[in-house]
Each structure stands twice: as structure tokens, then as C-alpha cells.
Image 1 (cartoon, rainbow, N blue to C red):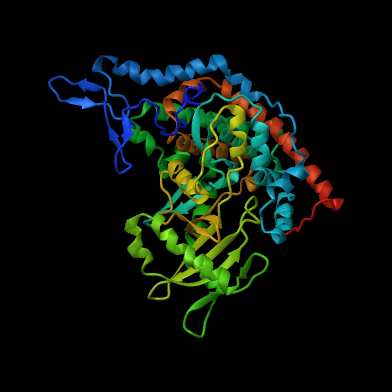
Image 2 (cartoon, rainbow, N blue to C red):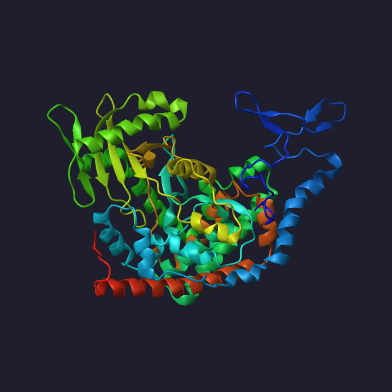
Length: 513
């Protein structure tokens, strides 16, 4: 589908920079795209300039205002086909798997010995269950109304997937920070998942039902208002909008200041050096190696460690060339397997210890990249199912599309035929636990994350189009908040079913790991 919700004509790619059949581009002899037969525009006394695919249409001065308003008007027109109030609906598609079957299906292909840890973590709370069941929610969202507007999705935009991390110069940035499921799809899916997570996190924190619903309501309101703000700004300003020092003020989240300051202080100490000091020991040859700490951290056989190390050679070809001299100053010393996350438990994930000439560490994470759990459900709502050449590349490019600032050592590789993403480990990362917030902070956190999600979506979807659809009033806020409460109730029922199945011995779980 294109950015207005209409079906794509034959030969056209998806709405994230795809080229339409009949455009003035063709492949040259070297495979590069070159301009041919472009329509020409004449400026006042200026040269005749070809219209180049990949850039906006220049237009004439007389119709500039109309050109600016066109996406907004298309967004408004979408309301007739998909009323904003319709987003309150939850109509489950036929064949929905029960909670246990959904978990078992999502465990396929993972390291078998680790899946009980994953099940145990998901069984801890309904919010934890949501964190591990992005695929089940995508199945359910496929039965809900969509406008057809494509954005690069986080794919797992729950409230705990926002946080702090370090930039290349040592500063702290706050943004979305998990992109395992990223894919181009319906922008509403991210927003509904985020709103639902605020309801569940608020309930776990002990907030009353009105407070939980208001958290979801304020999340959507902040998304909508931020999108309207971005739509009014010059394109470059909108792309970089809402600097971190302005975020709390923009989102009216002042009650979070103390919490964010504490998280920031902890994040500054969360470095490769600190992790290496706790998790490695000196070797007789003067190097260092990881120390077993099962089941979370374990050393691997030499052949497995060598395969990961060799994979880093291919990784170097995916990193920005200006970073290669930096990486060349580090030597690879050891590789270990490390269990991570909730939804990610059971995927193959390694930490690699590198040391510079002074023995100072840099730790890279080499994490298996599985296909996005959203991909199988895109066709049901009219979106093209993307062809993915390398799942690690998909994750890295999706992350770069959504974040204002990304890890400058991001890349991807293949190890033993499996795709992996590569990134810094413990890159001054910190996060707010939304389930531990005080009741009066739930709505503040919702507004902050809603604003960040809008900024991320606006990097791939035209904010004018989405702002036109979302509008000025609270109709969308009310609808998605109602959906969030309904889906939170469903998630609690799914979680209870999983807990009962564990008690009955139907599925194995390891708790407290």
C-alpha cells in the first residue's frame, strides 16, 4: 500500500522510499540508477532542472502552499474510510492460538535449554507476558482497523523499550532502544502496543484503573500533538526535533525528573569497563577471559568462539568506514554466551571482549537476528511482506531509520549460517522500569514515550499526513485508550492461562533467572 492507504500498483515497492514503475530512473551499465527522460522544470531565468526520483517534486511557486497542504488533506480524507473512533475496536481474527501455543510457537528455533527461562520470565507478570508476546499481539492487531499509512515500526514498542544510551561523544540520549522486530508496517500497531503497555505497567505498579487508562490516553495525546508539531516545522528541524534536554518540558513530564536523573547516573556507570571488571579474569598470557556465571553467562567451546570471532571480520564490512581505524586498535580476547532480555531469551547472543593497547576493554554484543514476528501478519492488512536479504541488516537499518542518534558501531554479520546484529554492549544504557513508577508518574511516562514514538515514526512517514489524520481533538486518544484497556484485560487472561499451564506441567518454566 502507498502512504495514502491505497493499494500499490504492480511493480512498485513499499512506501519507504520505493521507486514507482515509470519513474525517470533506469539501471546503468554498472547497475547504478541514472536519470533518463526526466520531466523538466523551468525556474524564473534559471536552468531547466530534471525532476529526480527520491526527492520531492519541486512544483511552482504558485502552488507551493497547496503542495504543503496536500498530505495533511489526504490524512484528513482517510478519516472517512477509517474513523478515528474505530481504533477502539478489538475483533480477534479466527484461529487465534491460546497463550501456551503462542509461547511454544515463538520458542521454535531458540536454544532449547533456555526456553524454560524465557517462559519463567514471561510468567512473572502480565506486563512481562506482553513483552514476550509481540507476535501474538501482531496476530490480534491484524484484525483491527488500519489507515494503510506505512511507517518504520519498532515492532515491539512497549514502555520498557525506551531508555538512555551513550552517543559517540559520551553524552546520553533517550529514545527507542530495541529493534529486533522492526519492519515497515501500520503506524497504529506501535502506538496501540505502547498504550497497552502503559495500562499493564500501571496496574503492576499499583495505580488505580483511572490512572492506568489516563496513562494510555496521554500516550496517544502526546503522539498526536508531537506529530502536529513536526508537521509544522521545516523538514530538517523536524527530523532532529525535541532534543533530550527539551523532552521533559515538551511532554509535560516534570514529575519524572528525579527518576530520570537517577537512571542517568546509573547509565553513566553502565560501561564495557564495568562489565568487564565484574565478568572477566586475568589470563597467564597477559590477556583476559570471561568467567562462567551460569545460566546467564557461560564460556563457549573454542570452535564456537572462533566462529564468532571470524564473523566479526564480515561485520567490519558493514560498519561506517570512518570507524575502522578505531576498531583496528582493539584485539579480540574472548567470547562468551550471554542470556538477554525477556522476548530475546533463547536466541543466540554472544559478548566479545576486545582490549586496546592499554588493556582497556570494549565489549561487543553479537546477537542473533530472527525474522520479525510482525512480518507474517502484514499481508492481512494490505501491506507488502518485505523480502529480507539479511535479518541483521534489517534490524540495523530499521534502528537507524527510527533513532536520531544510533550506536556508531552498529553492524551485522553471519555466524554458522545464522544472521546476527552487532552493537556495543553496556553502552551507558539505562532505562526506567515503568512497572515501578509512582502512580502520579505513569501519565508523565506515557507522554514522554508517546512523543518519542511520534518523532521516530516521522522519520519514515510524512508527519503532515499523520497529523492530518490524527487531528486536533481527542477522538483518537479516547479510542486507542479504550483499546489499550481491552487488550490489557486480554493479556491478563493470557498470562493467567500460561501460569495455570506451568502449574499443570504442560510447559516448563524456570523462575527467578
